Image 1 (spheres, helix red, strand yellow):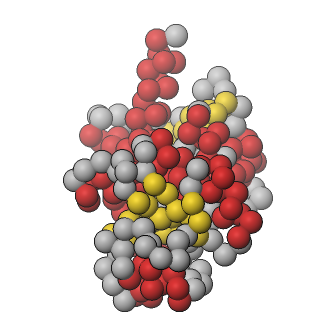
Image 2 (cartoon, one colour):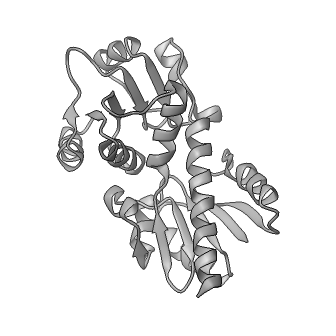
Length: 245
């Protein structure tokens, strides 16, 4: 298997180490590399990977919407998120999105129970946020959205049957998909201080939320590992279909 992750930046990515471990675990001869691809070059990079006989690739910020447009076939997860983070190169370029299942799996492992009927707030409305909101909706969570652009936040609420961020009784669980440098209003900071669990989709040196909030924040490592495992399983399933065709 010849695999890669594309995005900008990617030098911090833990995906190569995770997927090389999965390859070893499955006793598959393969490789996984990180390739920096700036915004605007996503579609061309995906075509090059296909021409170079890659099995698949992961897609990270800021290319997930470009990747969706470059795919010839999309799973329901990718269509709902309007973004792709995992691609399989077969007869078609097939795109899916595993960010949502990654977030849900990580939260449920921390809670040791289902997300169903929990009140979960999502900071942001971009590609990762949309995937998470879709997954939470499908698993019967009550969701709330905050973002600086009120129109975008409202669109996310309508699309995923979520509600605007409440001024009182904030959600007990919060997932931040905001970039490390994003400004957060004091009223949102105050509500995060009261949450039982705050998770940052960022990980490694990009995790700055705990310092800014002055409280414990779960970094995105567990979320990344869960979505990476789902991506790897997606590639294996498609390889099995190709082999059985």
